[in-house]
Length: 328
Length: 188
Ligand SMILES: Cc1cc2nc3c(=O)[nH]c(=O)nc-3n(C[C@H](O)[C@H](O)[C@H](O)COP(=O)(O)OP(=O)(O)OC[C@H]3O[C@@H](n4cnc5c(N)ncnc54)[C@H](O)[C@@H]3O)c2cc1C
Ligand code: SF4
Ligand code: FES
Ligand code: FES
Image (cartoon, rainbow over all chains, first blue to last red):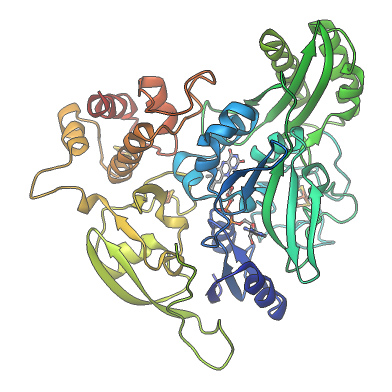
């Protein structure tokens, strides 16, 4: 690891100002991803700006019945929050399906959204990787890609975004609040992570020196139910092979609202707009769910070793919708 | 937590310069003021600077749990914590669990149940187990908690809950069944 300076930021404004003054600075949340990547030599910041003690550690109700989540709220505290458990169970379940108890106690909301891919070549500085070193190539495409993308990937990069939490936030239409040298702006979680295209170096649309300060969940109309399902290689403490966050509202047998987002399939949480379109207004039922999900996954382009993920995702989504229907 | 910026060394380059800091960690009830390279993790501080070798280094990447300690009462992987970022924290290691020469009930239960073979993972298992007991008492849910369970009040720790909550602690010797029993003994 390269030596670095350290600053415990006293305010968001100071954190952003110091970052802008020092190229190569990084914000430090819980450090469970950044410190790991520094040990691996993937990250080598000259300055760590510790934002984990900023007073952004609260979950509060918004005036319209939504929820405002500070960037430094720990994953375990967010998952346990009574308002999250009762109103947004998909979010609580997604957090609890990720990492371990120790890691969730340390990891922050902001850091979770910005965690980097677990692609083995990205984490190994002796290998080429377009994301780490633009133009060096993508060994995953012909190599170890069993765990990587099946949809939305490019010739340049087939990585997946590993966050479970982000998948639930995408299905719940959450919004990210950013603060940077040019002031504040908001970005929908569904627009926050990018597809790799011809520039996989950027995972998200965050700008240099911009900080995540909050994530805001909109209110859900009465009668909306949600859940998160995840398939992995072992029963606990493993990243998703495929996962789904589903949000559903059914009235008199008709689907009033359906939101689906897949995890483990793409470079970003994959919001299933095609499936949602097919579901809206349709009668609730397995046949409808199956054809809607298939319409979405028709766009999948699996690689040599990961076609099984498409099947997994299909079953997870249909099962999730069916389970929600019995509750709706 | 008060937003302060203590303990930086180096001068003349604004607020943040230098690659070492002087910081204070309260470890097992005693304050230790140390000047450390910023790269030093809490795990290396304990093992290399303070001679507290209870917390173990298995993977150094958050994957095995052998380094688990309690930070301000909550379990964490000390291999991923930078010491400088924990300035002011209260840290409990396996060495600090016994009180007045009496072992912690979970340490007793591990002995009683013979919940180890080589013992390498044991300090991490025990610190993690103590974290689990506190979290369940404080109503923190797990992936094994029914979504319909009440959202406040303690969670009962059955075997499925314990297994799920302890999944961040690996044991190469496979002592898992006894570890689950030992934690179950203390939970009930
Ligand atoms: C063994 C292991 C298993 C895991 N399993 C899972 C899993 O199954 N599912 C899952 O979803 N995750 C998993 N994780 C990943 C874990 O969830 C992330 O490491 C964690 O959420 C990152 O949060 P953090 O606060 O520690 O981020 P940090 O490591 O502090 O930061 C991550 C990135 O975000 C930036 N950053 C942090 N905070 C801010 C902010 N407020 N504004 C702007 N930038 C910021 C940092 O500069 C850095 O680039 C696992 C991790 C490990 C080590
Ligand atoms: S998939 Fe992306 S992250 Fe992995 S090696 Fe290819 S370019 Fe790098
Ligand atoms: S040494 Fe920290 S988790 Fe393995
Ligand atoms: S007892 Fe040997 S690793 Fe657990």
